[in-house]
Length: 243
Image (tube, rainbow, N blue to C red; front, side, top):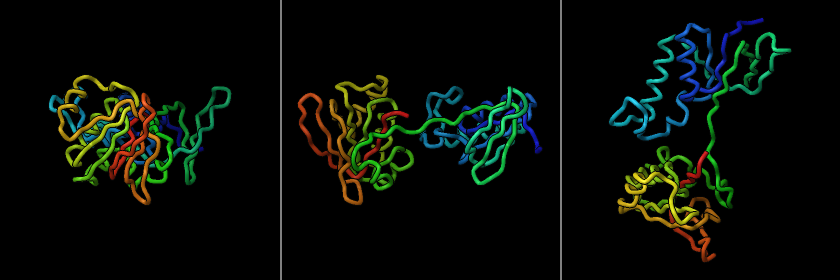
């Protein structure tokens, strides 16, 4: 039998790293497993303004780096592997066994699953086919690729408006499409987005199809009040309807 850890953490986002900081500082033998880069979704956040201790905000990559350095400072072991399955303890005795993709097992007496979330999709024609060809779920990742172009944001929450304002730095025009007649985002974000001359709003409208042959050319939408359909032209469609 190989080495048995006290705790195995699966996931290296803010939750996993926070658990790792507490445990390693408490001298509890802990291993964190992350299949990609530690930091989670804050890695794709351009500017974070609501995290305590940073009155002027902090870039997501910087905050992730601070968390990672703090965890390693206390001796947290981190490995880049992907856990494919877990074997539970037998009769509440002995360790959990995590099987890793590519082979190899990790054993631990306790298990913390901090695997985060994934983006919701619209599930409309053209969306899946044009991912990476104009369809994106991350404005901070792909926004600079649409410099001086028209883009479309689908969603009406905080993330949608924050990303619409980020996209406005690069794009010629940003059209925000939302299915209700009022936005769900906080008032301060609505005020900022409404004041941006590059941002337009198409409310009470649902997305029907991402239009384009080989690349995004627009988004076909339907007004839920009138049932009228129209196509909004654009080179990019950013789907920001939650996680």
